[in-house]
Length: 113
Image (cartoon, rainbow, N blue to C red; front, top):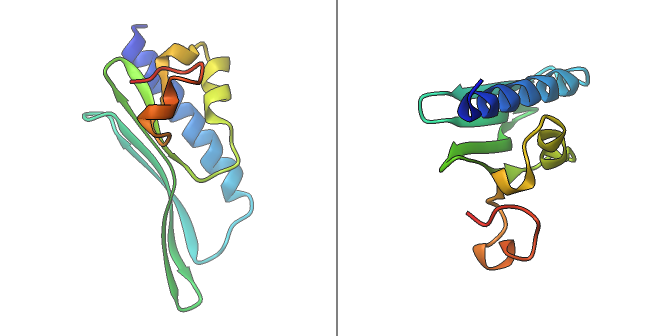
């Protein structure tokens, strides 16, 4: 399997597992949505629905695959996605923590861009 396919498979597997674990504590009016755009390599985990009279549309997790790296764009969960990706054979140098400002990325063990 080539690197891009490995990235896609890993990200989809992780997000499906996360969605299943979140769904075990359901809010009846709020759905968990998985969005996989394999053409542009964008992957999202969303909360969508209603809490009483309040609309819910919240990005729990967003990542992209670009420039031969996995870009973690948003993580509003307690899940350590970077650790889980590493356990799937993806090195820190293949992961960009995109929600960190570029000026601080160089101080981590992850890719800078």
